[in-house]
Image (tube, rainbow, N blue to C red; front, side, top):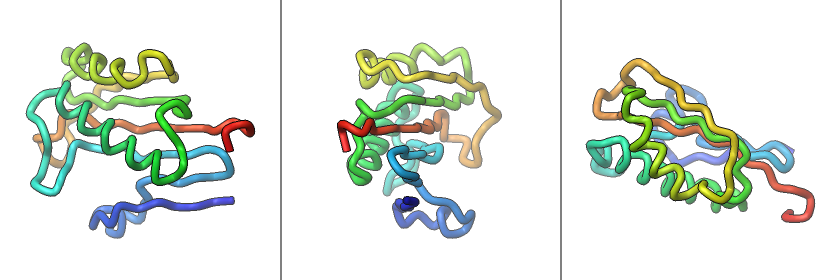
Length: 129
């Protein structure tokens, strides 16, 4: 089974991607930024990470998953020296869940106000479906 999930973002149509794709019991979520209706939310790594995780919580729930199903998390940071700020917000959500984690230092994103992007993979066990 393959199912796609979108947000209606113009970028999804233009670039030809989905916010998330579910294949059987696994959900792959595209890298997500702190973009809201009024533009980029937050001016620091902690606030942007918090906002992104809230957005990702909605994507997970819409697909019938939860943060507890997340097995892999990747944080893309434009300034690796700010890893503790992003890591603190990430730990507030995943402290007990403990998925795998990659911290990746990247060049600036298309919008220089974007400091963080997060990509997740979630998997449900046969018991939780």
